[in-house]
Amino acid sequence: MNDKILISNLVVAARIGIFEEEKNTPQRIRIHCIIELAPQTRSGKDDITDTIRYDTVRQNIIHLLTGQHTELLETAAENIAKLCLADKRAAAATIRIEKLDVFPDCQVGVEITRRQTI
Image (cartoon, rainbow, N blue to C red; front, side, top):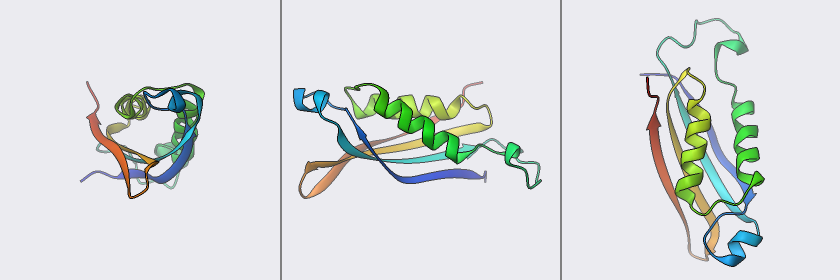
């Protein structure tokens, strides 16, 4: 089993959706990101350069989601997965995105898993 980097419950105001009000008004979305590290990524040393930095991943996700309008949650999830997999130490990325305020009684969203292509 491989090590994993976790980012849970990251809430961002993003312009995401197909309706006109969604295109113009940011809405709260919650992101969960799990990055599975490739085998032998870590050398066992206590060194930050030995792993993927979650602070950098978090900032990149925020920048990606707040920088432009996206029509679909599926597209946003794909873009986050690509961002995570750009680091070759990542073997896979699972991304879950939920819209928090669409319905009063539930959240709606998507979850995808993508693997590194060699």
